[in-house]
Image (tube, rainbow, N blue to C red; front, side, top):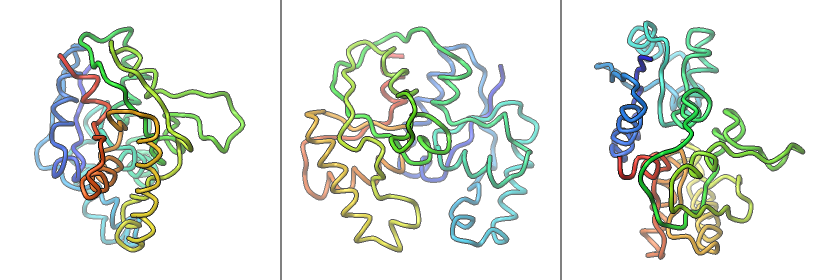
Length: 237
């Protein structure tokens, strides 16, 4: 299988170690991966703000770079959702959020290495409600969580979920800029619930949620850290 890695803007800027984890995992499973040069933003910030026409050149650039690949993966639920929903049929069925790709396509039975820590699992809004990475609490359906399934493959990990496990952390992209005070309060509430679990780490599949919560942790000097779920899965590889 030949895979193209789409590197989201904010991951490149604030969490490049997540892309290292992506490459380690793909290599471990024998999957050939390319990171096409020249890629930039998919246009999500402008599109979500109502300026889709201004993002058209980004859409055309993204399409030109990735249209020849059968499979594209990215560690970002919101970016993947944007491309699926706003790009028509061009990439439907062949662009995946990275954890979704691991769980649904690769389907690993085990992972080497260990991560002997207690982690509180954060279920992001886009991942839970738009990519079905977990069961939304507002729907009367049996519980499932693909992220928890993946973490169960790593020795030593103790996984807990906080009160209101799929409530928004308050980041929400432009929401955190336009409604900063509400965003901060939501983030503080979320981090407090993670702290109450006694976990050492907050983990999630989205660097944006972790970035928001880490900022609150740093400002308040709280005894917990954030780590991307893919970093846990890649530990020891």
